[in-house]
Figure 1 (cartoon, rainbow, N blue to C red):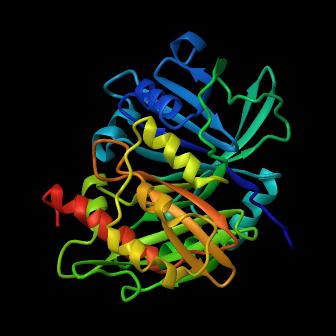
Figure 2 (tube, protein in one colour; figure 1 turned 45 degrees about the vertical axis):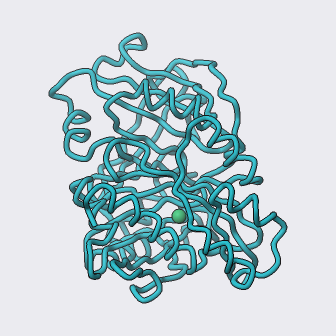
Length: 361
Ligand code: FE2
């Protein structure tokens, strides 16, 4: 049977964190998200609090525990603050599960129906790398903008131009990249976009390997990294050591005007990785003609790369939580549909400067 497209898009990203209220505050006041929903004791949810936030098409949920013996507390103790669930919208959960069953690769929990006063939400949960989940949400019998158990909140943020999730990157252990690529390709019908080996992505000290899988003509993009052996510790290994397992390394969010977005975010205290002056000296010969002024890019530490279709601009934040694990990328695509090789190396060097400061290089 031809199932057609079984996955629609990334729905929301749920984080398990030590203080959901503080993560919500940061995302509203620094990143410009609206707070749109809340669940907790006041809404009949006894064991946790969750804040639901939105900007453009980006939906995030920050969840924390209220009791010491909560599985959320265990997750935070073990991993620190991090991504628990990248949920995906599906049009027909029954077909999606049949498709996954037929492929016979991905593990999932039995589909369940959550009945509410506003219809039934059909969900199933896939298990991905580490403790990361993909909950599949079928909203076809559900008539509510908020998940079950949430009440509406209307606290606007000051938008910073963040529009949609471009890609979500996972870090996995050495030799585990290919099995996880197979999970998405053979198990879930994704396609492989591109791969970088350790020669492409290495500095003097350390390296990594990376492959990109995507679904529905790049509607969903999940790059997967693994550490490679170098003279010193790979940044992927540093992540694995602090997260204590594979997990989500970064989420890239797209903007239509990266200069304005980064100016806004920096003025509100978002900290970005810096890029050495020499990068901008050689930039014109590497990427050719671009619309942006070189001095704006250097002032804001924005990176530029090119592929066969065009170019892209990108920048990476410092880790968002306390451990050197999860961070954000801001990206603007000007024609480029994939990922340039050049910036991997630059990102790598910038991260190594920070890694050395932590005594982990
Ligand atoms: Fe990225």
